[in-house]
Image 1 (cartoon, one colour):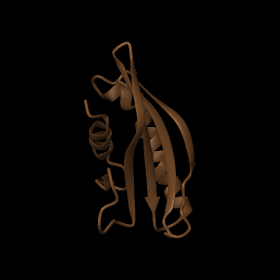
Image 2: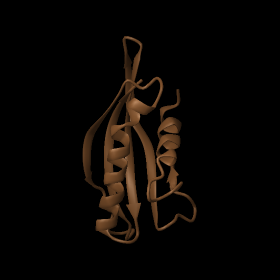
Image 3: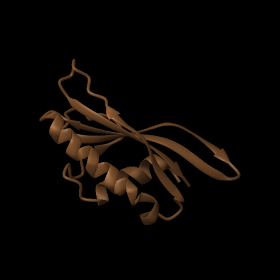
Length: 116
C-alpha cells in the first residue's frame, strides 16, 4: 500500500470544502484553497507499517478559513482507519500553525501516525 496515495484518494472522496484540490506537491498554479499531503517518516515493527503523514491546509483567504479546512481534515482523518481496508489505526500526533508570512498563504498542519 502506498499510504500517501491512499490518504490522497480518501480525502478527495470525502467531499471536503476544497473539493478535489488535494495534492502531494504544490501545483504550478494553485487554487486559493488546497490541501497538501507529505510523508515525513515511518517504520516497521512485527510486520506492521507506521507512517507519519503531514497534512497541510492552505488558504489565501484568511486564517479563519484555513482553520475551518484544518478541522475538516482532522474530522475526516478520525474516520480514515474505519473506512480504509488494511489500515489499523490513525492518530492525530500534532496540530499547529504553519503559516509562512513571506508567501501570504495561511497554513495549518496536522500530523498523523498511520498504522497499516
